[in-house]
Amino acid sequence: MHDWQSLSRVRWDCKYHVVIVPKYRKRKLYGKFKRNVGDILKDLCRQREVELLEGNLRLDHIYMCLSVPPKFSIAFVIGFLKGKSAVRIHRYLLKSKQTKGKHFWSRGYCVSTVGLDEETIRKYIREQEEAVKQLDFDFE
Image: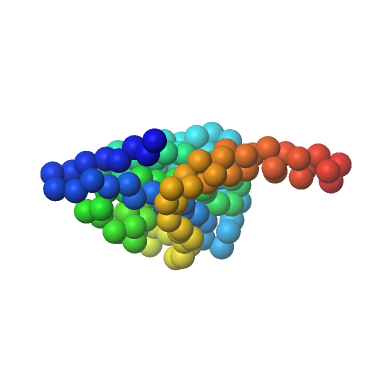
């Protein structure tokens, strides 16, 4: 059966499939850096009561399945995640002393509603790593 969440006057199930990419699609998301970016995004989601249901960091983009309360628009949530994570990435991971112009993410993003077909989206996100490994194997 479907699990609905509640706020004071609303029952809701708002899930989104989101893809964001680093500026100029630079391949920055790997190794130890990859784990730290994931932790930063998880922490920021907790701050806004957004549930990160599934996530996968690739070299040049991030897939996420987010459950967002209806009191926030998806544009607000993505802007918050991209803005605050860029500052933290520059401050803690890149050790930048610069105070202005902390760009990390591209301006755009891809978002779609999950609806009642959540398991298909979550399976797709989980299987991205296997698909890339298979692709690498085919080229060798």
